[in-house]
Length: 568
Image 1 (spheres, rainbow, N blue to C red):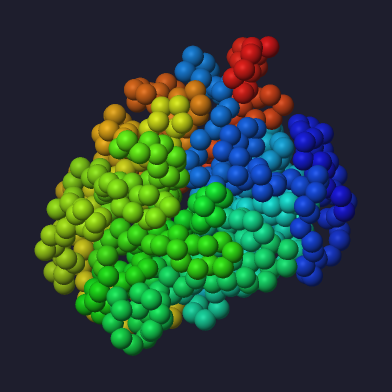
Image 2 (spheres, rainbow, N blue to C red):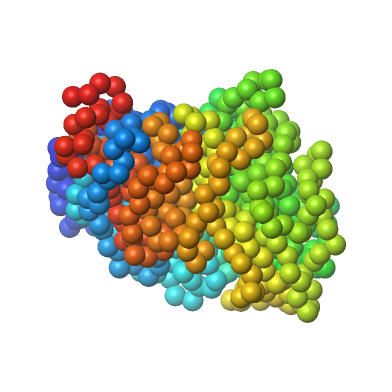
């Protein structure tokens, strides 16, 4: 079957997808591996994934490899953003709420909900094809929510994870299944919630279950055949480098460190940056004395072999579930008088970090959590200076809370304002610890954390300048702090995010002034993106079980070229 040419856009491309889907809907699902297209028919090429300009498409979870969530589209700007209108809404009937970021390639949108994948007309929301798969029964904890955060695309193939840690390969033109690989089989507490990442000829995936006594890993599969290429275990076995940071015995088999968000990639350095979650059990550190590598880390990996180049651990011997799975953002800029290849991360532990991504050298850490008592600061080597507070049987109030000072929802780096934007939560929890035995089919927190009703919790949208090491502004949110929404930014200096009042909002990236909002009527648990079809720029975001798309009215579209060049 021939795919439509990548350069065809608009209704022609979308019609071809419809035709291809109808032509193959009666065909049996293909189980044998097929060649990945590498010619002009490719929907997504390696060059598209490397291109930080993005243009009309949004071909990967964070837009491109850098994790910046930044678009060069300029049709929507400060002068006309107040005219934004909802264009269409797609409703999903899947088991879990929508936490995915959709991808858009040549006018076709690819979206997931639970174990289902959809291709939509990106201009109208019309379903072009739907691949359905039942949710898995008997899962626990995060996996039992049947959350899926999106897909990856290479050539004419679409890749997605399932709730029970299978990697599926679908034909992106028809939705037909090409192959199915189970990649976490030795402990039924494993799950998967992430979007895959395509790097070169490989598809990289991780796993969830870090609170349930599994052993984390990043695994790479051949994009053509589905054959495993390499696997990096985030909890080293006895005798392996890093194993000295764990007690002797088999606790490493249940050490956590799961990899439940997609990483970033630097093609020039040929390095993957993947972040890891908390150690397990979460709150009882007495059974796992030591730093507990490679939990709460960013790992720099060779994409060809999976070998570790360097690591940086944000929270050694974590006792509060301060995962480091927040998006690592890659930027190149002069830093303290020297050109640097930087990695920025706003971490769940309440500090924002700046690292040299070539060497892993720690450069800077700044507290952004306004209420923080687990540490006094960060030392010159990047290690936290801990206080004497630890979870206890009677309960210990510690800040940030169990939800973290920030979380997996996406930050954004804006090339126009040269600032880093992210959502944060100011809150505390009472942490309790009690030694418990691991058991399959049960969570492994040992024991729990709870929010005090007397605590005043608050969310903020933050604008941070890493060069001056100062916050340009903080925008306090109004709501119940139940949102888990990320942000993105544009070449026109806008920051777009889901606020804490169940609204989709746009602010001025320079001042933090609110410019426009739309009431979605439900909490936002996803990160937004932008794309263009037939010369029209759109924003899209998921909320509850609905996916919303927004654009300017037709009369406003004509005033600005979608790429910001000349008016038409």
